[in-house]
Image (cartoon, rainbow, N blue to C red; front, side):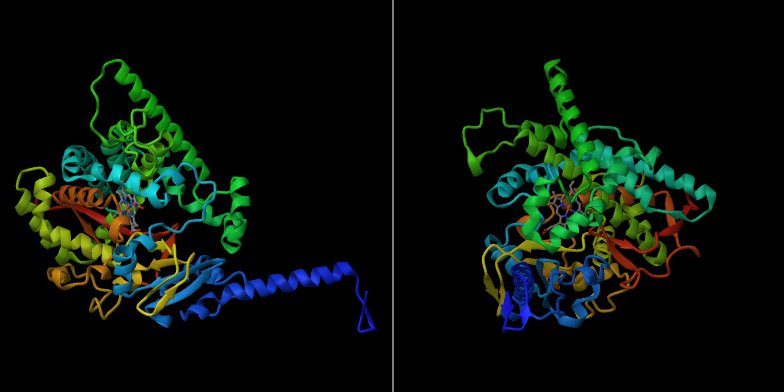
Length: 506
Ligand code: HEM
């Protein structure tokens, strides 16, 4: 074909140029989304967006400093609006929740996690959330305390052994094994005993859960071209570790079969989470269908149980290891906390009631989660375009609240990098939306109270016996420069090492 009588171009070339042009024009249009909505943010690269800056390097944790309380970025093709304004957070999480019910996810091949409340959507999420919420009631948590204390005793013994070496130790594996044993025994009635073997298969599989997906080039491609997600799903591409899902699904199915066999053999029913989940299994007797159904399918039971293993392990262990670090770096706080533990406990063991009396312990944990919120991004999907406080949130975007940005804002928390538990004496004067380690609203962390009970029980038990001491191997500080986001969890770039000393009076 001749163009303007001089250049001879074949139809194939013209088609290629047209396709390239359309591809370019579509990419440019996609990038205009935030400009058109009046939301500021860094200039995106066509198609890649800010993927290379935020997903690959974790740079996201510093970006609010440049663009203010509301700004937009593109994680490839996923438009994400970061919000640190408490009024907007309240609106999204609580007041206007019906427009922001679901969490954003890639919809890849992630069974059975897709059946869990972490990823479930709309009415189905609400139905399952209503079923699982009572599992975390005060009465249920009270029943778990004995088992948690048994695990805390093993943890204390492990620390006492570590003290004998007089070497600095990496504390995270100790707490990781403790939380795995605690969740396994309290929620599932099984004795995993990972505290005797830090490389236990449960721990190793749980560790992999969040890590593998984001390193998979096909997952990255799905983020850059979300329209291709159905294809990737059909090809079996997943966000969460395949081997972890397979391992826990197998273990959980075996546990279900075992319990059913025990029931048939007339053995006494247990009263743990897993039994309560199993009691909610749909045996066909539930006459109400759809969103009213009060029962769960076998797949849904597996989904919730798997999530409890994973969520109950990493977040709580991560927080405990930051408590240990903070106590080692602040001996005055540790002394005061130890005095509180001694005075409340006397010769008694920690239990549900006496840990509730430890007000300073509560402030220590609250302050640790302010400085080191384990989950670094709470997000919601925009179901319908809405305008809040003059900002338009376009349908299909994800709204995310970065706890770190809020928790380290000097206007909200004077001297924000210092560990000061007593700043929480004025808790009632603070806007709760400026503190969100567990999220907010109906989709808030369902395991929050379990996590708090578990952490308090463990700390009360170990501080009766040992102290954390900073050594030359302990990081001088853990701040914005030397933390990163690893698999969605706040992680110091170098591991935290401290020395353990048995208390001189013990
Ligand atoms: C210190 C420990 C923990 C922290 C910091 C933490 C943090 C969070 C955060 C930030 C969310 C998102 C909330 C939102 O979107 O508003 C969440 C959700 C969730 N967490 Fe936790 N969590 C912890 C422990 C636990 C434990 C022990 C369990 C259960 C055994 C658990 C189960 C869940 C579940 C099931 C969800 C999804 C809730 C839903 O979408 O309805 N978490 N957690």
